[in-house]
Image 1 (cartoon, rainbow, N blue to C red):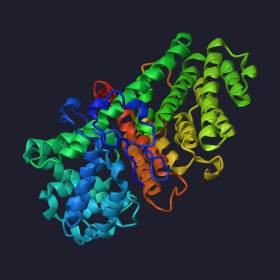
Image 2 (image 1 turned 90 degrees about the vertical axis):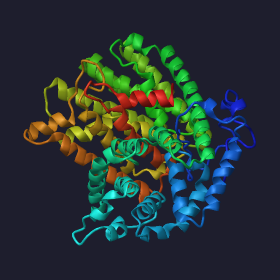
Image 3 (image 1 turned 30 degrees about the vertical axis):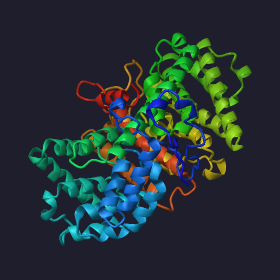
Image 4 (image 1 turned 180 degrees about the vertical axis):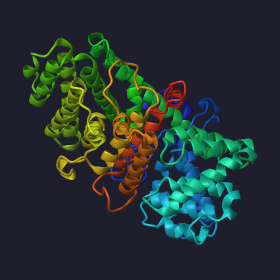
Length: 545
């Protein structure tokens, strides 16, 4: 099925008028084909050529894919650019057919061709062993041959595929070999290629947020002697349409948040609407999912506020009453709560019921019991943390992490998204967290706890995995241990998302959301030596402002 936002119209005149129609019939809606509309690169919208036509641009790129069918390397390179510019969703059928017809390139003796074909095939869930594909490029000891250390583009591609590891020994060696030789080669490269290589190493493909990387990939394409103007202009047009949509959504969330007035009642609570929206924006992508982004941002805000109430505001008795009120899920039963808790309870109750109504209206589902239980589980986990702190009890690293995965809020947030996307509770394994969500949540918790600065400037502190681990292992390298754990969870995520037999009941949209959540952690928790978040600031400026 092919569906486009625009038919035969020029983008520029529609810049201000197109947004209300972005959720119309032109948007791909089959959730099992994927719903997300990733945000691409950046560039002044006015640099688009006069009369640029979105539909003609799409047809031009599609023709390029068909015209180059005899040059398989060229076809795969074009697909790679489309993916890096976050434009591949417009050409999914063509890409599926092209990847299938170019599978034989995994047997190529050329490092770039073999690794690029392998990566695109893995992303399309083909069961191909990286160890077998890469064997020809290694010696008898399994080490990569030094002959390849000068092949810069091949090394970059090797570095890219190494991050889609599912536990293959060749990809561990591929990561180390490619990083070492690319790092030493940078100073000898021309400036444009050097910048591209440095960015590829600093923000590796697959484990970094693609919307963020797209901006830099476009800049690189614009520096090449041979350009694909249609592809570049499509990326620019979609960036600005996405940006306008996101700006509109942020304003709606800000109005809701100000009207709610919780920060006036809870002075120590965080007031970070833009940051909360960034989580939702990067995880829930697509013009047609605008309402879902807004509702998920609200759920995220409640997770933060409830966390602050448990850490900074409530007494032990008040918090126990708060948790009991959530279990009853009845506004009348919440009357004994302190005023600030009652306000939070009412807002949380209202938004959750609105999401239940949305799921029932759009998909015929009633997930009230599941969502209520998820809130109850979160409150219980926060209460456990508070009891640990107030009693000076030190949990084991395992107990802390098990509870911390819940208090990250990820299982709760994704359960709301699960039902908004139309999934049914029969697709869940009882009360167990789906493995793909467990891995993403664990990465979020570990990345947060690894931070060299506090995530928030506040007085409350409820421990960290790093602290608990060092109590039991005082001479160990905690960060190295945590990075290894994160690597293991990424491998599990890869198995869940790129194997045809794993997470088969979950849609591509939901799996992509799980990947994007994990990718977002390096941005949200990417503190520099001055305890600033430069990549987050850059991302906000590029995608929102």
